[in-house]
Amino acid sequence: MVGSGWLFAALAGAAYAGPASLISWLLAGVFFIFIGLSYAELGSIFPFSGSLVRIDHYVHGSISNYLLGWAYLIGSATTISMEAEAIIMYTNKYLPLFSTESGYLTPLGILTAAALIGVFTAIQVIGVNIFGKVNTAITIWKFIIPTATVILLITLYLHPGNFTAYGGFAPLGWAAVFTALIPSGIIWAYEGFRQALEYAGEARNPGRDVPMALVLSIILVAILYMALETAFVGGIDWGKIYLPNSKGQYVTPIKPGDWSDLINSNWAGSPFYSELYASGIIVLVLWATILLIDAWISPAGTMGVYIGTTARSLYGLSRQGYYPSIFGNLHERFQTPWFSFIITYLIAVLFLLPFPTWYQIVSISTTATIINYLAGGPALVILRRTAPNVDRPYKAPMPLLIGLLSFVMSSMLVYWTGWPYLAIYL
Image (cartoon, rainbow, N blue to C red; front, side, top):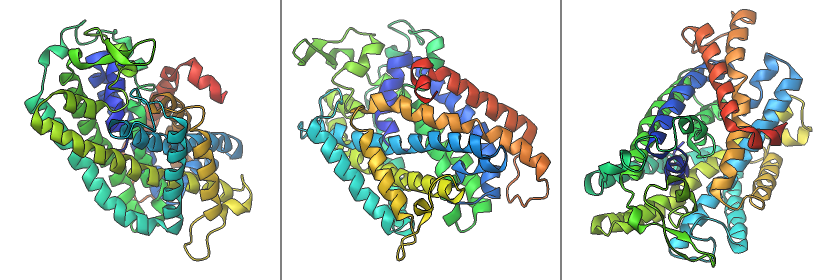
């Protein structure tokens, strides 16, 4: 859940909603608490690898599950592409061969991103247990670095006027609080909660660990991301942000309070690094260098997890009979779905070509995934009625209310996606 979202979504949130993006982060956290509670019980009933593309099969049948599974598969695969792009985008600050300042990958950058995906695919084929040992250390790092960034910016470089000047707290209107949820990557940043379900089949105690991982991760990450948004908005110095001229040179000063143009500025390719470096404060400038290291570690950790997620989704769809059995074949030595990993790599690389920047692909990735969440609430309620005696290591409280709110909130997220992105899947 703390991957490239923390590196980019704060700027994108401010670009779409201004300081009111703080409310967007809070709303998203509340939404995912209810969505997560539905899946917490479902995950304890079906502790399968790739379970999120298999649950609806037992409730609504094969047709709806196939369609939802396909959408979810696209959402997972594009996340891999996004994390690879995030790594390459931040390299512009010390090696400007792979991307522009605003974050568009060059042809060489696309090739490098494809190579990165290939390396992490090979690691995942070797086995989740090996990757898991490394990912534990990465997870600790991924909380320490953004937390320290928040503390440094708020204590040393806070401009309180940014929250009230330039049109007030909601300069783009209160409707922007909702429309910002999808294209800014705010919803996408929370979606890592589902990894507890995807890896449930390999958990030691899924009945205890899956629900706890779902709920606690959402609460902790909501607090972290709201703090990051506060730090970023409060750290903006409008006099040090530039837009490209007709020749693509970033020499045109941005108009103070022009929130929407942040996404086109020279800060877009590396938001927090640019903010820290532009401060001129020695401690923050030095910390900006640490962020260049984190720009590899945080996205790499999430990319590795999602490579496993996508392959296990293909594996799960194969086990349900939707795809040929070869997708479910396990490597003789490593016991991982090797063919599904190959297809995962190909899909992720294909999405790099038409969407060579994080900001373009995030809406497509989010839209594909949230369509799948529509099934969680109804599945919770229906299984309570049709299979009341099934072992439930975790039982969600007030299932009717939680199921209803989960479905309504998922539906609203689809609505706020907007027609241009939703139409791709219709």
